[in-house]
Each structure stands twice: as C-alpha cells, then as structure tokens.
Length: 330
Image (cartoon, rainbow, N blue to C red; front, side, top):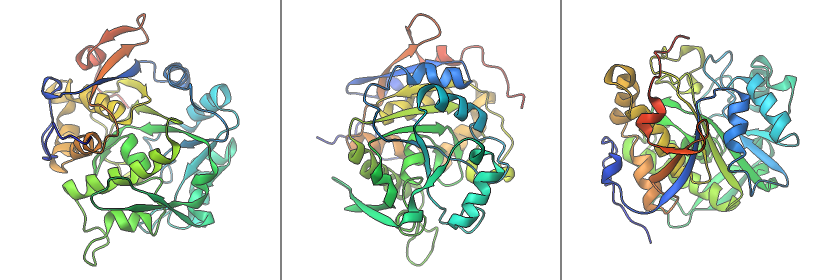
C-alpha cells in the first residue's frame, strides 16, 4: 500500500525522527577508492549475475567530477569483469546528443581504453510499464537495456540544476530513459522542452526509475559515491560550479530510497558552512520530493540501519559518518 508520511513539499528536508515505517540496510565506507566501491558492493551483490549492466554517468568532455574511469576499471576487473557500462544519449544538444558525438566523448574521457559502453538507445527504444504511476503508464527506455539480466547502479552523488540532487534515482530515471522520447516525456510540457520542474519533475523522474527497477526486480543494487559533490550535475562538465561540500565516502544498498536518503542525510548532518550550497540546491529545486515520492510509490524505505564497514560493522548514524570530514581541497 502506498503511503506518504513525509508530505509532498519537496522544498523541505524531513529529519530522520519524523519518518515512519520499516528500516532497510545501507553499508558505508569512508574509503573513496576502487577498493572502497568493491568493499560495499560485496555486501549487496547476492542477486547480481548473468549479463550485468553498470549504469554510470560517463560525463561530458573532461568533466572534472565524474567517478574516475581508473576507479571504474579497477572495480570492474575485480568485481564485474564481464559487465558492460550502459548509457543513453542526451535530450539537450551537445557532446552526447547523437551516438556519434557520444562515442567521441566516451573516448575523450578515457572509457574506451578499457571497456565498450553500450549506448542503449543507439539500438532503438522499448516501452516498460509504470505500475501505479500518476503521470505515466509506461516509459520509453533504450532498447538494449532489456538485454541485461541484472544491473549495478554506480552513481556519483552530487547536486543537479533541475533535480536538486542526482543520486541513484536520477541516474536511472533520466539515465535509462532514451534521449529523445523518454527524456521528452519527463522534461517537456506545453511546447517547452524544459517546462517540467519541482515536484512534477521529481515525480516523473521517479516513475521512470520505477519502470526500470521493476523490470530488474531483485537483480539491481545501488552504490552512491559521495565525492566531488558540486551543486552541478556531471552533465555540466567543465562548467560545473566549484565543489564546496566535503567528500564523505561510499554507500551501497539493495534499497534505492535508503541509498539516496542516507546520502542526503550525510550532507544534511554536516555543518552549515559545509553543506549550505548543496542543501540550498536541493531545497530550491524541491529535490526532496524524489525521496517522498519513492516512498509513496513503494520503492523502498526512508529509514535505514547504517552499517560502518570500516569499524567492525558498527551501526552508526549520518552524523557519525561525516564526523571529522575536512573542507574540499580539490
């Protein structure tokens, strides 16, 4: 049954003590490295197998804040040697708008040095059902997404110019929707290609995500890397705003809402000076509606047990996770 304990105002951060319902498990490490990614992934990988997709934002040319390709290479070699990175083309004109442009950008950023990226809408589109949606009954995705048996959602957690923040939900909701049909369904309104914003945008992103994760069922996990957290998305490339929020670590869960909520909570637990810009970005774009709508849609829990894998699997809270973080130093 759908429930909405957090309300629909996406401008308001909901403190943990105001949340209700069950708890999921989120694993955490401060080790920002390929080994750290592997460490927490190992704890959630039980149902990952067969032909595996890694959903990753590979970035605009020379984007400074993406998960480093060298990290992804090492992670894949250790944990997922037969997997493929998957992407889709963009809705906006630029260096990833067409497949040809996108492949040049992949080469510039170093991805083609060690893997082949499947641009899933290069092969056409497919429709996936949206169960219980308010805006959609189906969502258009890149066709070859359906060729995979399971998916690892490897996300650079950061701000976003339209969505407030980009976590696992945005990585899938926008990143699996094909470039010219699915993304238009999410963004366009009344003749304006970018007319959708705030609560409506968060809800449409979330419904798009639900179509994809319902397709994979239990065979999908979420790894969020809290590093180089500009208020700008990686889609802004070298034009991204300077990073002011401290690096934190990496979280992983089989629950998409818990993974994104824990990431937001860690930012919220920082000092005002440390988190002001990123929290303002989330609030002003009404990005918290991503979280409350995922809960309404039955996609996970906003309460969780946070397990510190660096210290004997001790249960901690978000404040303990960010204790001692230092200002971003580039």
